[in-house]
Image (cartoon, rainbow, N blue to C red; front, side, top):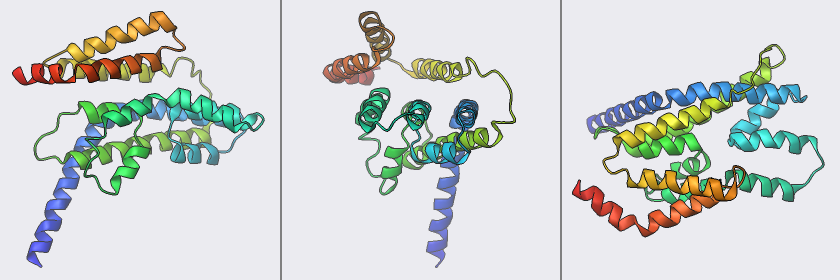
Length: 244
């Protein structure tokens, strides 16, 4: 009995440390998701939907850009093929996220299904860039990061849907909050790296694809190019990192 209690105490301490670390890392996400979630809920309210719609959408879909686009789908003629094509184009980047997270998600048990479902841009960025102490379980940390980000988004969208008709302010340009946040996450990761080759390659390939394909079509080609080049250079980059 004493061993069982001791084990339960150790597990509780482990979960508490992982949750505290996840909460600290997701504070900037909370700020961004609250603003954008409110905007989404208000937008749905303006279009004539009750708060139930943004609440259920954010809970079950959890894809910010796709959720904004889905508002027009709900108001237009039923066209599942168009909805599928547009959603795939918007969220195709998650295919690359998933490939890069295969090793990290190993051994997570049943939590793996939720980690896959809840892997948004922000959770991916934190789970890839966070530097944790030896006393923090990475798998629990990733789970708490995912569930906290999901909670922030659902809360913001629901509150926006409830109070949307009462809040009157100009939300133009508010989406730049997420762009700024990603810039900060990238700079933080860049400063932590000893070898900046991968980051510089990513920037360079993205700029080339931006010039070649334009602002509306460069994301998928750039991700394919980054994935291909980094796959080819994986061993040299790993050797360079080991030397340092």
